[in-house]
Image (cartoon, rainbow, N blue to C red; front, top):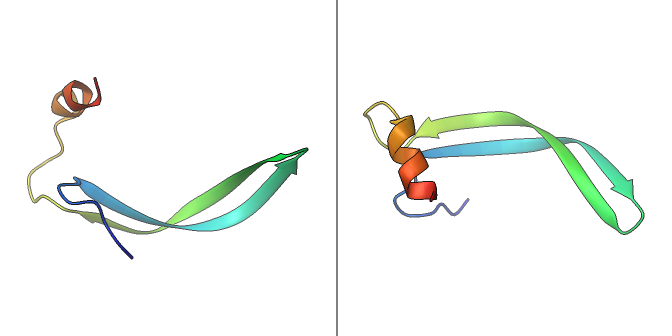
Length: 52
């Protein structure tokens, strides 16, 4: 599975339910695999700054 370079974490998910409404759809999923890309703890304040 391709991954973005520089990502802080990787989540592989498996769809558990699909909900179709008219011409839209939504999927519910469970995390099947999780890996942190960086060994340091995730800094939530830094993530908020990047998201701005």
